[in-house]
Image 1: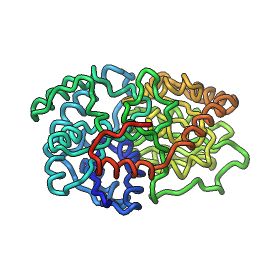
Image 2: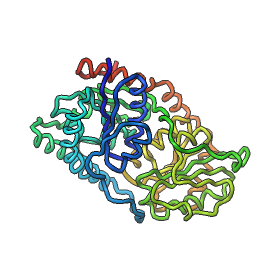
Image 3: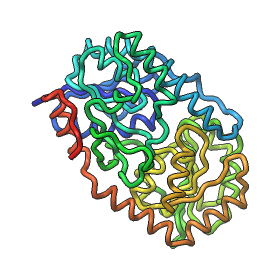
Image 4: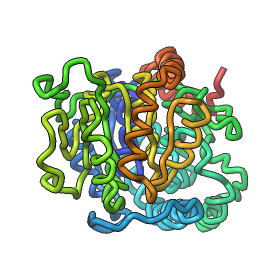
Length: 391
């Protein structure tokens, strides 16, 4: 059965990548694939080789450097509620309805914060799957997004959904190990865990071996591709703490930051705007990052501990979970000093238990079925048009 699958996501690269591996597997299986996303992500999706449609406007304005703010959970909840559940979901319902009527998918697959796509699918009577992009499961909560989503549902003639059953209505694909998820937020009955897989070919390169210190551990440092421009002088402070350690360091700055701000550096330090993390992590011993779900899961998929410096969104939840699981340490972004970075990295590299615990999660990830398993579920969903509970 050849299936037409429309993938949609509302955020940036961190929302695209979990869908990408599934889309690649679906395309390899002979199904018809297209994406719908914000205009700023169209070129990224095109570069991955997919047909893509621009939907509406971008969340937020052009990238600009901003001062670092204290982490504020209430502010992040408010952002999720107002920016994603109210504003983005509201304008994406008619756009998704229009795109579905034009492209005629059999199944819609969206990221878990593309609430407007789910409402649109329900309006059309279209079966849909959600792909989790938030690893702990404790960030998207009914008490945060329930009211605006019920208002949106009422606007489109749908009944109230106080328990957010919509998010797991038919099928949930979770590219995270179950052992990582917050025990207080169990997966829905329609959830199926799959292995987070390396995407298809992308630009970038592995570390240059000629610049590495032989026998020294390699550390990867990133603040992601969204919060990287909201970090004030955090890059400089962390680099100052890492530059004199006996390590090899690869740092990626993300878009909107000029690499020339941080040169020259010693020969064992490589700084770029972007390198695909899948090309780096097999060569690494430790990850220093902001705690985004993609960065944390990339580290754990390779059995690597992390030093986490949360900046926003679900990053504090990831930091708390990594500490609880014994696979990382956390520093406060406002109070980070070069000395605190140096001490934390030395501790993480010098204490084998962090690596051992991360390797247990790596083994749990490796034992999960790959994206091909998800394709069988999507084919079944298209055929039966009924919820698919996990076994």
